[in-house]
Length: 463
Ligand code: FAD
Image (cartoon, rainbow, N blue to C red; front, side, top):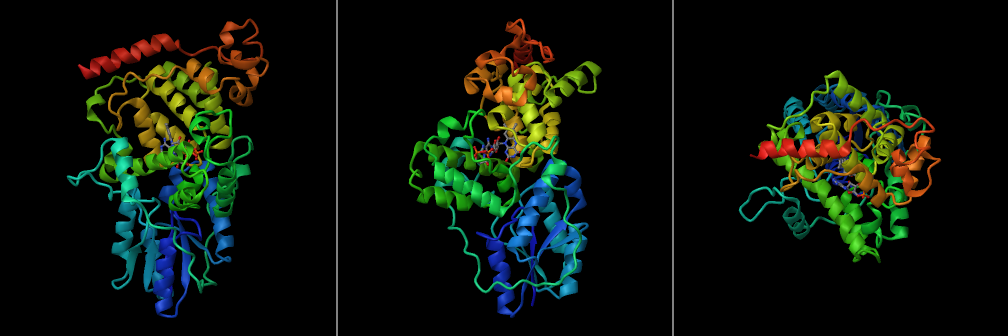
């Protein structure tokens, strides 16, 4: 009997427990595995061109790894999956468990729609530890990152799964075209993007390991350096599994360095946010901490606010470090973590716009756009999330630039109008007589004044 492997955030061959389960189910009845990707209109509508390009690339590499057997079908999963199962007389449908609010609803609907006798079988998940598993001694979810990460490490994870031997694909099933376009068509100005796909992920990961993780702790904060793994879009689409990364870090000569420990901690943030979303699905689009829900925001529908927001989106706020980040996002569909924090802070705390507006913009443009990491990352910055007392944390865009882009190379790379300014002078063009000589815009707000305004508003909320 055929088993269907319905792929979603697990677009890879290696370390794939659901593939192993599909193979075992098929093998028991001398059958084959049919790998299926459903181009779900709901998900496609929520992804911008950059994310669709990443998806297209990942599916292309997956099809190569699966010897051309991958079948893409367009439509609602609750119709497509049962119809294909009936067409093939499949015995079971195998998935990696989905943990987002939409994914959970969708999977429940598919399980209901399958003929009686055909099970939807979840095996593994996109995480080292499936969300919901790490609980306090009292059986409660963790609210704060540090104790979660400690318990997560103590919980531990399985070894990577082997590619099954004797795997036989079910071939010759008709499908639809792959969704998305290539990165060149999707990227705003054709700037180089990291290709997404299992082969590319493994190549990039071996580059990271060749370099070693010893310096990751210091370099990860420097957007002017190639100091991070840039694997986020790969993890998003599951072209590489975090368990593979964790196993290889542990076995690597640099695996005991503080840099490697920091890298594992970053992976733990991804797991933490997925866990928070698992327990509190409503935190995707509303404040996790209701204490700040009375906070006064400016209306982005107001024309003056809309102008500033547009300057933020297009990288024309007049603050070079912020603008460099927003332009990197626009051009490549990826932004360095430091810049995600600084640009998010600018929208929420300098322009006083509710984080939800920024989170939507990021999800539309990021190739790694992930509802748990993105929306909780935004809430962390906004002070409405899992952190204890961050309302006073207002990033200063100039000091951040001077500290994390000390020579100004990152800004010059993304903001051509400032390339004539040498060194760190690039962070304050207003101090130079020729600062605006090449059309760089003036500041849309005064940071010091807006910081004071934010603290006033947060103070009011806390009283
Ligand atoms: P590395 O430094 O190499 O880290 C390795 C991996 O750890 C990353 O690929 C990622 O999976 C995980 N990770 C690292 N930092 C974080 C973090 N702070 N939170 C959660 N996971 C982390 N990450 C996304 O994957 N998708 C998003 O949509 C997303 N949106 C964000 C929005 C905001 C406002 C903020 C502040 C952060 C956001 N992040 C998001 C987290 C982080 O910025 C990216 O994961 C990271 O920049 C990706 O680059 P990298 O792969 O080189 O990371």
